[in-house]
Each structure stands twice: as structure tokens, then as C-alpha cells.
Length: 73
Image (cartoon, rainbow, N blue to C red; front, top):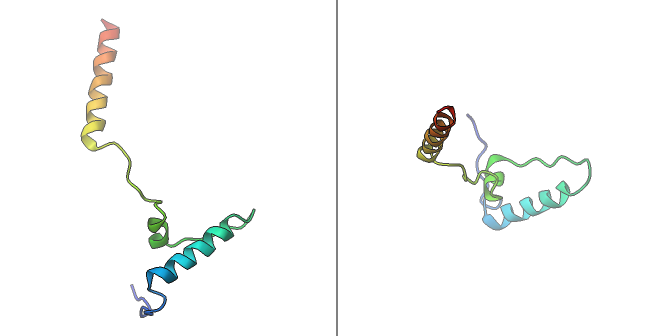
């Protein structure tokens, strides 16, 4: 993937925060579809992982199977 060179001014956290703030203001306009790139979305917490761990999911499935077996007798 070819990317343009990174400009030191636009790569600063202060500048990025300003751009994100402006996009958030734009997003409040009814009908306006503000677009956030993946890095901006991540900075806003859009990809915070809060799912069950794989082990917790497996444990809950086993509990459910045991409950079904109890109900069947």
C-alpha cells in the first residue's frame, strides 16, 4: 500500500485531536455522515475490547449443556 509522506504538523496529537473534535461537532448535524479513519475511531474508543474471553465463553456453554441435561432428567 502506498501512503503519502507523513507531515509532521498533521501528525501531531494536538492537530489530530482538533480534527476529531471538528468531526464530532459535524456528526451532531442531523443527516450528516461524519467519517472517521480507523486510527481516529480507535482514539475515540470505538474498538475497546470488552467481550468475554474464549475460556469464559466455553465455560458458559458447558454450564448451559449441564442445565439442559438436568431438565431432561
